[in-house]
Amino acid sequence: MQVYETFDHELFSALATTPENSSVNFPVLSNDSGHVTIQTGIMKLLMMAYAEAVEMEQEELAKVIAKCISQKANLNGSPLERIALNLFPPEENQEKTYLFQESLTNFNTAFRAFYDIFPYGRFAHLTAGSAIIEAVPAHVNLVHIVDFDICEGIQWPPFIEAIARIKKSVIITSIKLDQDSQFDQTRWQLCNFATSLGLNLKVQEMGMAQMVKKMDTRKLGSEFMVFNCMIGLLHMGRTRKTTQVMDFLKIARGLLAKHQGIITFGGGLEVDRTTNYSDFSLFFNKNLAHYEALFESMEWGFPSYLNEARIAMETLFLAPFVSSKSWFEKWDEQRQEKDVNFEKGFGLKGERMSMENCNEAMEMVKEGETPYRIRIEGENGNEMVLAWKETSLVRVCVWKVMTEICKKKLNQHVNVKHVLNHVERGCGLLALSGQGL
Image 1 (cartoon, rainbow, N blue to C red):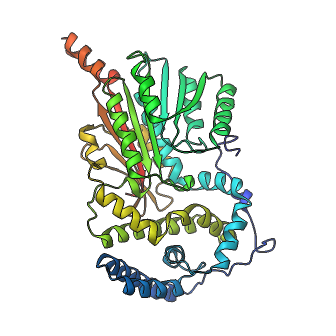
Image 2 (cartoon, rainbow, N blue to C red):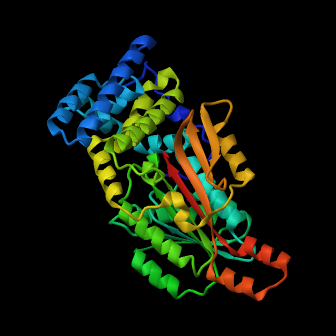
Image 3 (cartoon, one colour):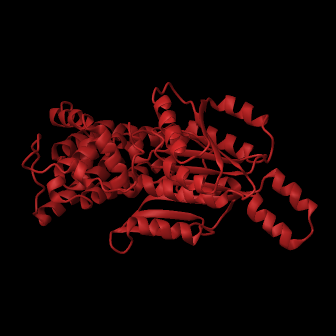
């Protein structure tokens, strides 16, 4: 997949399918706002009733409600009606199957356009990338990125451009989670891109245990470590088990006790650990509000004559995350996982977001001209949030890490000014970014 050619974000023309040349016929959305409002209200009540029935283990009642919702679902209706079609798909949905197959034929174009048009992934990548660049000490020549789920590697070209300007070498280690045949292509593309900029880049793949063993033998202080974990961002089309994510983050925290560096963590609702969802209905409603905002923001971003392209993108990039079965399984997994404390920063102190980073994000989403908002949150102003109106879509947090190297050097110096300067440059940062808090 060619995803690194340009960064101009002007790709509407690639999907400009007008009614005259459309190969698939889609009804136009209704302009009857009153009817849509009533239907949306009914649909929301039914969905809340379904969640409560599941929570009370009333299986038969939940099935009846789900069937009712499915009958009211509409591929061309309100955001909530389109969510319903994915939450409770009919047993035989030939229209949806055909649409998905047709969308796959243009996947490469749709993937690049989706990433460039909508800010969800770019916000997470830009904010985390800026945090990395700001945290790299001037004296370090090598930046080593350990990437939990590299996918197409689309996060790294802007970072490679930025790091090339400050003359640093880069290693990217992709964690091998499964048999992913895409890695070789991703490595080739990233290395070619880096070579075009004169950057010394090495891209490799290894398992977590192998990575830990190799890091234990490396010279302390010789490189700046970045542990990157992006999960559930819409363009990725998949998420990972909470246990896998926690294993990676525990390893990263342990290694950062010896190596200076940061952790960047981005994702969807999987990252939201600020609330203990002991009740399924609370978890369900949180997901519902989140995806309703996403569907609404996508619809807002398309002119009416691109209705087909929007529906195709919803099918490819939102539908995989919207399923009543997967929502229940994710809730059950999170409820049983007791060692998830993302909101507490792993016991680390929050590091305030820089105004430069915030201003970049505001410029990217054209805050003030669009319904997108950028917010600074967290106890120490260490969280940056991309929101659609009042609903959070993506969150990036930063924490400070005091490494053993930093502690030793602090003990060796008594000059306050020197110590403060050393802390600024020698302590890592922990950056956590995720979609949908």
